[in-house]
Image (tube, rainbow, N blue to C red; front, side):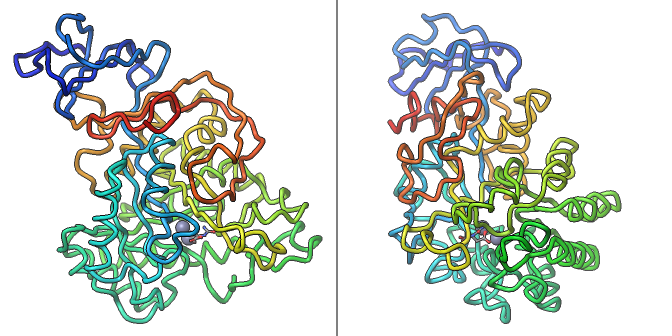
Length: 442
Ligand SMILES: NC(=O)N[C@@H](CC(=O)O)C(=O)O
Ligand SMILES: [Zn+2]
Ligand SMILES: [Zn+2]
């Protein structure tokens, strides 16, 4: 663990940050010295070796690699009343994130190199996290003609993840072509798995006893599973890479487990809300619980937790989906789908998964695996010497009652309002710069 100080970890540099006494990924306690945005030393660092450094006292805190979100809706361009790249980056930093993948279902859609570069540049300008654009699979998310996948990849934005999220790429031929196309440059298709005939646009509640009683149009688990099953077969056929977004059913878990056992190149994510919230919350018809895919019964939730623990599901992704009041505060059937997630994700995962799921496990599913899936160099590290300094410092014992008024997001569709969760992100460091201190934007 301890690394010797070398001459390059020079003391008396104004660009130094010394984090003292943190438990590294929940293990050994060490100091971390950051110089010029890079982790320069980890171990016991004598104060005089870091003279002039800004000091963060991290006694009792857990140090994690900065979190990476594979699935964020930033809403810019087009719906800047719900979120912008700046406000979404703020929410990400507060949540302990140092990188987010910005979904393509904006207006206009991110389906060209120019559009991807625009989002990328807005992220650089905001400067709080790495904002990596996701490219659309099809033009206008219409599901018909492939978007400029190669041009988006070769652009300054360097897009590697493609998704029509919000919509499913439901035409098998189009999905096959997309998988073939991205294979050439190591890209991946992230699929929103929803058969539009089994679960149409009005389907807004898990199909089962609760939907029957409430009289809400049902969205059966099989509408997800048939697409997951088809897509893993297409991934096998094309020898290309598939990522399954927001897995919500035990059946999808079984298919993914089977596909992985055959060596099919598939990865999967689960949202924090699908790890903790269940269908019965819809009893009060509160649209804050309306989300795609819908909240499922407890059996599914338990299967998702088990799959995250055993590695069948690789990552937690927030699907942070901010919506303006005038889109969300309607009768249940008319309200927009989606809920906030960035600021609460880590605590919700900790609360849902319990202590047996270690901090090293959390680092794996919320930072390292997402960075690997998205091909983000320098993110998702292990806090080793020489890595870019993307870090999150967490109070593991804090009990927090979420208040939606505290959010730095522009939107308020927060399903965690009033709930108690365990653990709290205190400090976030992006590229050696403190973006969040004591839970507040710096
Ligand atoms: N998850 C949601 O309910 N909504 C997302 C779209 C999506 O992730 O499918 C949105 O863009 O609002
Ligand atoms: Zn989706
Ligand atoms: Zn989404």
